[in-house]
Amino acid sequence: MSKDQENLPVKIPRHVAIIMDGNGRWALSRGLPRLAGHRAGTENLRRVIEACVEFGVQYLTLYAFSTENWGRPVEEVRGLIRILEDVIDRELKELHKNGVQLRHIGQLDRINPSLKKKVLSAIELTKDNTRLVLNVAFNYGGRDEIIWAVKRMLADQVAPNDVTVELVNQYLFTVGVPDPDLIIRTSGELRGSNFLIWQGAYAEWYFTPTFWPDFGKEALQEAIDEYAHRERRFGQVNKK
Ligand code: IPE
Ligand code: IPE
Ligand code: MG
Image (cartoon, rainbow, N blue to C red; front, top):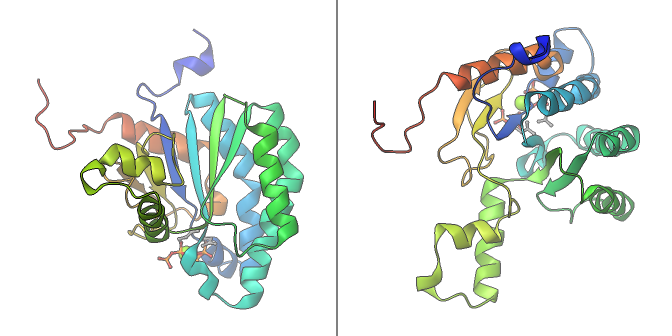
């Protein structure tokens, strides 16, 4: 066993989801504008993604922009959309080289056509990669996702008795992706903020006071180590 492997935590969550929170406060604490915090919050992305690959995580979902974030000042919203575009321009080649499959969850309707095209072509380019599935939640909201699923089920004339958990899963943005095992929220807030409200029904939650731009490989390792010690019961009684 290599030195690196010796240090690997024992039980690895198959799907890790992260609420990347605290960029604004990170910037504020340094006397910088909020957008500087959002930019800083992209510098650590590569490290976190590479750490997931190294740890053997198979699915990573990152909450980048919620349906409620449209309510922020227009300059911040514009800045966040620009940052998404810059991240694709800067990181796509490396992600593809590293075998990352890019997916998007949420709606692309309010995003300008040229960025929409860029997102769709990044998804197309990486669709056969298998090392890590990276879901980017942009303009994502759990309630919006469920409404969208219900509308499409009705349009498909699904019979009431055919509605099951498995069928609903088929209609969500996350179709084909297993439920998150571990949901991490940075910045000390203890809430879900409309993230994966259906899929996270039995996820283990991990909260850290660290602001997102300061969250790196070691912080991820700590979260995974804690996860490894949790006993998941899914409403049942574990045999001893
Ligand atoms: C998370 O950081 C990024 C987004 C929600 C887009 P915030 O911008 O929410 O940072 P805080 O919570 O105000 O510190
Ligand atoms: C959740 O963070 C959304 C993202 C991290 C993209 P927010 O900062 O928007 O959530 P609240 O307002 O604290 O609930
Ligand atoms: Mg926040």
